Each structure stands twice: as C-alpha cells, then as structure tokens.
Length: 245
Image (tube, rainbow, N blue to C red):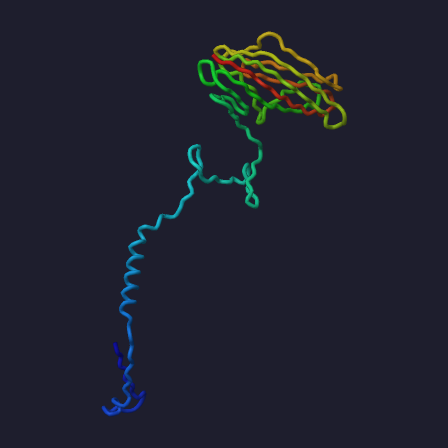
C-alpha cells in the first residue's frame, strides 16, 4: 500500500508540471492484514459475550427463610466503627428444646416433649424487677411492664426467688422464697391452696413479698413491700411448671 503527498507553494503561482514532479514525495506504508483480521474477530467475540455478563448483585432483605441485609435504625440498633449494638433490652421470648412452643411475652421456655398436644407441657422462666421507696406494696414487673400469664385451661406451679437491696444506705438486704399454684379453667383464673413463703435471710425485717393471681387479667402478680424513706431495689426470678388441657 502506498500514499502520495503533493507539496505546493503556500503563496504565489501554481507549480509547473516540472516543479510538481520535482516536489512529489511517495511514502510506502505496510499494513499487517492478519493483525487487522485478528483485531476484528476479537472485537466481534467480545460483543457476542456481553450477553453472558451477569446482572448487578442486589442484596436481599433478611427474613426467617433467607439470609440478607438489615437496616440499622440508629436508635434501638446502632453501628459504630463496623460494630452493631442493640439497646433497650430484648422484650421477646426464647424457646428451647424439642416441641417447645412460646405463647407468652418475655419468657424463656423449655420443653422436651408433650402429652397430647405440642406445647401442653413446659417450664418457663421470668425475671421481674421493681423499686420501693416506702412501706406501700409495689408490684414487680417483667421488662416493659408485663406480668406472668396464666394461659387458658392451664395449671401452673410457680417457685419464686426474690432478693432486695437498699441502695441509699449500706448493708441492708433480704431474700425470700415463695411458691404456689394457679389454675385457669375456661378463662377463669384462681389461686389453688395456700401460698408457701420463707424469709431465707434478712436484716430488713419490715420488708415483705407476696404472690397472687389477678382474675381480671389472668396473670400471676408478684409484690414487694419496702420500708418508709428507704430506696430498695428488688429482683425476682420466677420459674413455672405448666400443663395445659
């Protein structure tokens, strides 16, 4: 392949034929046709493979059945330097064991079988808290202000460990152990028999505890009585053994 370039004067008259012949320059250029053919074939192959490129990845939303992403709300769940934290506690129930079913709020439930229906035989655990500032009886509650339910057509044995500590002065504490039985028949709840109570150890003799059902709400309620002009914190650990109809 060759290219001819003709040089002319920038100003003045036209070049004569002899001048044109004397100023003609011929450039010889070599083209590698095989390389051009390879380039064209490669470009066509790349174009054909564009349809094989996968679509951009989209992170799915996490669910009970699928792994995925969650949204940090910045209040109850926060993230700092790549670390996720939660605040405000966990007001939910935890179920453990074969055939375990949770039907309550804020409980730890364990089961390893059942009598006739899944969930009719189980053991549950609750933590209740409260503070007294006087000699007036005060109810101890589960996180969020909840109480222990006595479910419909269920008989529930409960054992309760209660500890208290005065926080505005040193060396005043007490602990108690109480247990009893509650039953719900067709939506009507009542205490069964008498409450068993022991003052295990104490140097606050005017503090007391009690437990009784509330027939209106079908719940078990735990109470503590402190002393006048004393700030006393209370914690109760309640374990229930339940059988349902």
